[in-house]
Image (cartoon, protein in one colour):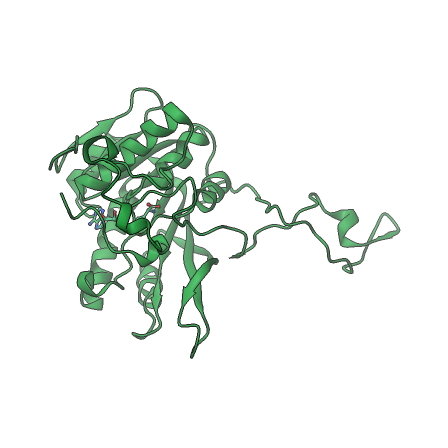
Length: 313
Ligand SMILES: C[S@@+](CC[C@H](N)C(=O)[O-])C[C@H]1O[C@@H](n2cnc3c(N)ncnc32)[C@H](O)[C@@H]1O
């Protein structure tokens, strides 16, 4: 594959912070063992393909069996006290698959306990004229054992009063009692900007890029500095970049050498420039120039609406 440093099976090791990127299948026990090198992670953040895109869609049973495969490789390399987050979708035009089927499958994974079902609100959606606009991104949170959890806060100020309680004989309302002037995100996140092409963190060609703010929230809540965080579906390398910024070590993988290269380049670019993406440019500009994405920039949709853009390789 031109311009890609990794071939299938390769593991790239970062000498500065100890991150790793492997070009392996998330279900491959040998491939993931090579990535981990005997180390175990405190946190897993997985964002697999959702089985929604027509040309990638498989039979639901096959998709769920595939999910079970990467849950197994994950469990082999998680600490006894660890957190697992999984982003997944529900196709309203097809029985809401695969989210509920995945949730049911996870009931059979006795080592993991469900903890929360989070919904993140996108700013753009579809189906606005004859249906409720589809703006949800679903995120499942499971734990093994008893991992740490740090409370997170949004930048949204608390404005509602009225929850009175007696403290040391004095009647106090909730704003006086609270630890922060801002509200917590809870399990409905309305304050995260969806990635779109005008944002600095945009990585053109990565159709399924998650916002750094969302991954930062997960990494901050469920890991500590120096911990190992795994993500077996790297794509644009959002978890890798979040770990770089928050001083965690990220061991990440993608089956596609192109996305492994994109993730490496995003990390390198951040270290050189402190920029989190390319905004209107793209990771392969040195080789391909800036015209490759020019058409895409015209009336560019959000990342989630795009198909894969690097098929030219
Ligand atoms: C939804 S994207 C992940 C997006 C990522 N969270 C981000 O913010 O950029 C899914 C990625 O999984 C990769 N992938 C698909 N099947 C895989 C497999 N069996 N093993 C590893 N990676 C796979 C795809 O190449 C794609 O890059």
